[in-house]
Length: 213
Ligand SMILES: CCCCCCCCCCCCCCCC(=O)SCCNC(=O)CCNC(=O)[C@H](O)C(C)(C)COP(=O)(O)OP(=O)(O)OC[C@H]1O[C@@H](n2cnc3c(N)ncnc32)[C@H](O)[C@@H]1OP(=O)(O)O
Image (cartoon, rainbow, N blue to C red; front, side):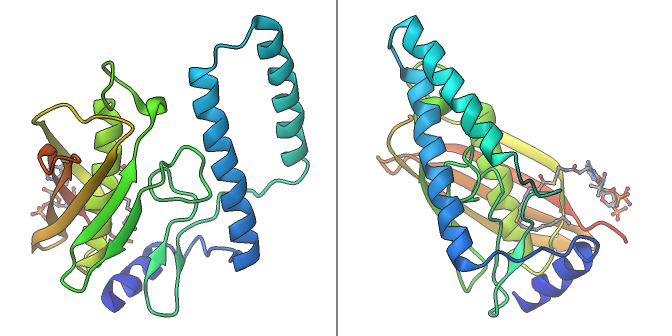
């Protein structure tokens, strides 16, 4: 983890995160959680047209209030004192990002990254199932985390997906990733998503390349 931190510190040196205090993080996470609920409500609502128009006007007002003070960039990856990092505004694990499910991940001593998450109807592709591109998003992210946990962070150069069976939405899913080998600047990582019945629905392999700076 320390090696990964050093490597990522070099990569992100041009964009030092402006740290957010924990109180601020919790407040923004609460806001993101409410917006997630709003997004699901928008996708599923069946209220009448006048109510839709009224709510749209109110949401526009709320957006304008948030925009009265804007950061130039979203919060970047932050490093904890233990060398662990968190991607607060990322689209997969970011608690501050309403489009992130969010996937709750843990990095284990052996470099395995495990996550639990539920994708609601917002992420539907085929009826009742998760969109394949959303599964790829989740897998790309945990593959990238596993490359970093291996001490060899990099950019996704290749991502191969095998969709074995439909991934249901609205139920708990797990995702697991681990680096299998590194060659020079390239790191090869494997990952899969498992449904609540314990069966693998999607497998992925990714190759990550450490950029030269
Ligand atoms: C560092 C990033 C931050 C890390 C933060 C960690 C935080 C952890 C939490 C977040 C996790 C997020 C995980 C999501 C990660 C993304 O979403 S990354 C965004 C999506 N990916 C991109 O945008 C990448 C775009 N492509 C590029 O920037 C460049 O092509 C690359 C991949 C950096 C490679 O460029 P390059 O350094 O000029 O590479 P190059 O010298 O040509 O090749 C290097 C080696 O790789 C091989 N290679 C390169 N590309 C390929 C390819 N496509 N196919 C096969 N082989 C290839 C070459 O053959 C060469 O091999 P050797 O000759 O050394 O044996």
